[in-house]
Structures are given as structure tokens and as C-alpha cells.
Image (cartoon, rainbow, N blue to C red; front, top):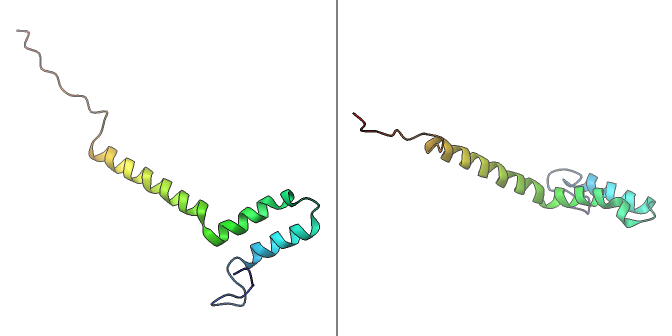
Length: 83
């Protein structure tokens, strides 16, 4: 939690990210200078990038599995009756 209180410890999971962002905002002249800290904090809270990464990995695994089951590079044997 951004409040700083966690369920199992003194500080919340993303409290360090929040403090980094807060400190950046305090010392910066432009809010855009803190966009990376804000991005880190939001990712810590919601895991959007991590979720997307897991989806991409799952797609690759499924594609490899399907490729293994049904290889596309297998050449069909042709029979010719030229005797």
C-alpha cells in the first residue's frame, strides 16, 4: 500500500517505489522527470507488464507445442508412376 503499511511487514510491497516517486516529485522541476519512477510504482502495484510478459511466454509455449505436434516443415512423399 502506498500508505506504507503492509499486511505482513512494517512496509507495504510497493512502499519503496512510492517513496522513490515521491522523492523525485519533491526534487524535480518538471513532473515528466519522474515518469520512470511512476511507471515502476504502477507496475509494482498492478503488474501490467509482468502479466503481459506471462501471456507472451504462454503463447510461445503453446506455439512450440503445436509445432511439435504438427510440424509444418514435413515434406509429403510424392509417388510417381513412371515405369
